[in-house]
Amino acid sequence: MPKAVSISKVDGKPGQVYYPLSLDEVPKPSPKAKEVVIKIHAAALNHRDLFIRQHLYPGTAFGVPLLADGCGTVIAMGSDVDPKWKGKRVVVNPGTGWKDSLEGPEDKGGYKILGGTKTNPNGTLQEYMCVDEGELEEAPEHLSSIEAAAFVLTGLTAWRAVMVKCGERNLGPGKNILVTGIGGGVALFALEFAKATGANVFVTSGSAEKIEKAIALGAKGGVNYKEEGWDKKLLSSLPAENKQLDAIVDGAGGDVVSVGAKLLKPGGIISIYGMTISPKMPFLMQAVLKNIEVKGSTMGSRKEFRDMVNFIKTKQVKPVVSRVVQGFDLDAINSLFEDMKKGSQFGKLVVEVSKEGAESKL
Image (cartoon, rainbow, N blue to C red):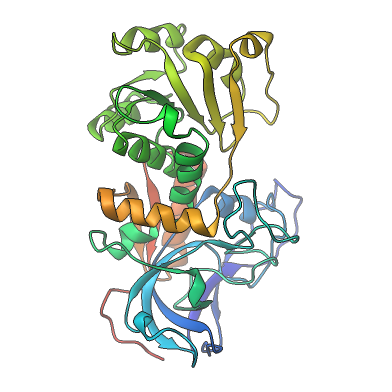
């Protein structure tokens, strides 16, 4: 029977428990009229998967395949599916319930992300996946399946945070964008997307090595936020023709507004997709007087997913992959979670489920 990886229940309080991985045998998928069956080649981790194992994520479920990022080949189709999908290598939209609204999900039940929860009992860490054809995009030809799996959720989150929330007026040649906490998947995609518009991208990190790697990827410079006076050092490194930031893309929260008010132009944007340092963030009068805009941003719509995939194809954007493990070796998959726990990764952590072109067992 086909295999999938989920979590098993053990006793423990949220935040203290760490649910073990479970290798499950699951029924062979049978597509409905508008569904396809995908043979998964690769699936990638996100921080939400770690939170699910710690019971820190809403709707945590046992026996539901983990992970929301996936790339694979369509091997079977329902009776009403467009024939164009037959044999195509595809990526899967990581969530449902959000069509094209700029404000947020239209579905009254909210946005339902794949992987490990009862709200959307499907996930990509399995041999075969059954999904509606409307959730598919053809995988970019210039990317391997491992790379294609690596851009799905983090790429969508970065796309909305950069391309939608920062807006065209703050992107492009001559504009200065700061991406904080470089090394994580979203931050790296924020770097790639902003860079692809022609903007000057600067980064922060607590690791000199990660800053050097970001510069090798095209960042104009970076500073260590653990060093005193890092904000002044950053300002001194900005180009002479524009000595202020146009936007900050941030996943930490904390003091980003107070620091950002010193760095940003009047009317500058702070786009926040996470608050890993603190769930509270002071908004100072200095930011009010400079007309600073703080915008929350999370995931993205079906339209934005399509827009992102097309941009990746056109601009030949490539994700950064930190480490890959093969197959359903639970010890190896656990080691990827350990990388995430320690924050040692630079880029995405990927499970290669099957080789492209491998014969289907269905």
